Image 1 (cartoon, helix red, strand yellow):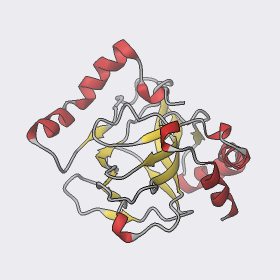
Image 2 (cartoon, rainbow, N blue to C red):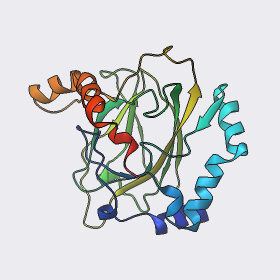
Image 3 (spheres, one colour):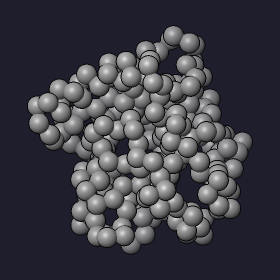
Length: 224
């Protein structure tokens, strides 16, 4: 609990965090430079990079995993009033390493005195049409989530009072694979709400991002 309190004290303000540029169907800010935000954040980062934590997640999953030391796409995540994250499956290959297969999401929620009427529950399901399992983003709750083609997740639009945001710290663990053994996939969107144009664009989002990345690089690798 002491670590969670310290992380909350060091959590960046929303205007100090870039808006996530790869999330066309959500509203989220993210900052991956966790270790630079203060002593508790540095200690937390070091713990995730430790051999002890590596052994824990390897034993848990039965896979030889490494935690991304640069937290690409991870780090501090924050959404305010009206924030949401449409249902999606995550990108599967690291943006800078074509032999790193994303296998595990590691999350810590830092939402003190979170009220049920705020919602913001993480909704997880195996298929877009399944009934989801809902997980409250409670303070000091940790979540380890296997991520693959069938890990659909997101959260619905929130109604938050002034000064309240949904906060979490995320990082990802990867398995080393043979180059070319897995077809790369960017974030795969399956929005449940929105008009026909939005849902049509979501179906073709993977192709659009491939074109964008070819010319402009990966936005996931830039929110430092």
